[in-house]
Image (cartoon, rainbow, N blue to C red; front, side, top):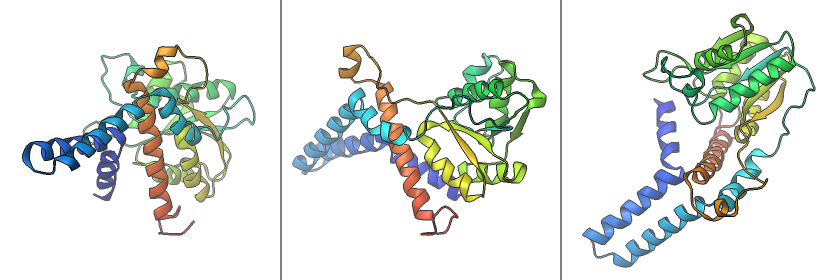
Length: 259
């Protein structure tokens, strides 16, 4: 129950649902109360925040500090194990396998396959439990996509009971002990994930995937026109910031204040 409550509260604090709630409250105040000035302030602030967070310069300036701490793996050090953390997914067997990996998951899996190809004889480990109504787990979805890209099934292990990063770290520790491994997750998530894995006594080698904050060339209009793509970047920055606050409040061992 705590897991689902955490997900719900955290989800409602992300930019889009939070600002929609603010704008919704403002509309109710405008229509049904005398608090017209308060309503106008809330409506203006909500609209302005939504506008700014949907602009590329603003969104990526928020996201870049969260995801730029670790460099892409470029061939060294080698590792026997490659751990790919689970993310968003569904499973529709009529789709192309990769279409089932949503948002952050596909870049994680493709980076995991790249690392597997660069580390002959290594084992790919996918983590993640099934969604509430899905008989296929996050880990299994990732494994099937990797298999469709040419990774043999006997080079893949699935850990399909962990529901979050802390549980993923515990499951990996139980399987491989303190052997070094490449840890693949979204660049924005990697700092938080490393805390959990190192707390388990593990030796993860950072291998970021799914970098999103853009510093390279873009068309000029892409920087000035609001877009749901840039709002998603703001959402990712907020999600990881909230996750890090929660991690800090719990302490890495799950005890408040214990680091």
